[in-house]
Image (cartoon, rainbow, N blue to C red; front, side, top):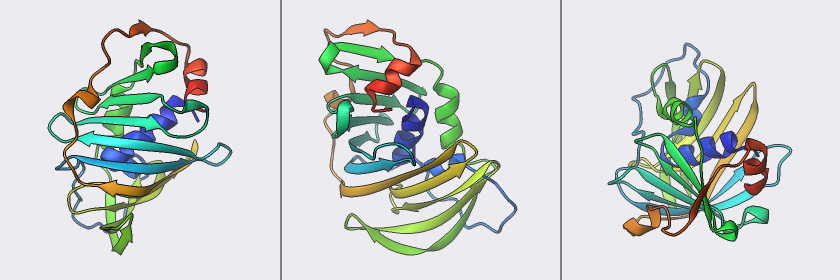
Length: 207
């Protein structure tokens, strides 16, 4: 799993990642909320064909539009990804190296994921995932298609997406709506800032 794929998956959890995919001329419902309006914490599985399924604990701070995802599985266990959705920036915190890796070039990608222009939403019905009710949508954009199940408060509980690069599935296993500690979204003090080649970064994340 590349960092690009992982970043799309994490942005999906805070917005509607499948809106990053395809647009065809179909009738669409009112656009759902794109960003959660409250703090939340969930455990998610991210699956991509040909790659091991990954499990991540994801915390979201509504006040700062910050997301923190910590790997709970595989060789990436303990590694944290901090996404600043407002700034379009990302840092990977690697406790094993006592280091923080800044990831350049994600601003355009994150804003593309969050962009609802040219996205068509078709309401499909209701579902219950991880104990929470959500509305299922078909999401169409220019270069693929997807679906998402979104709570009234804007939390994505499930999403799928497919384009010419492949497919991705994100599913919530647990979800709790509760205030999140602000310190959890800060880059740890005392950690060294390092640069890593994209291939090594992908390996750290289990790719």
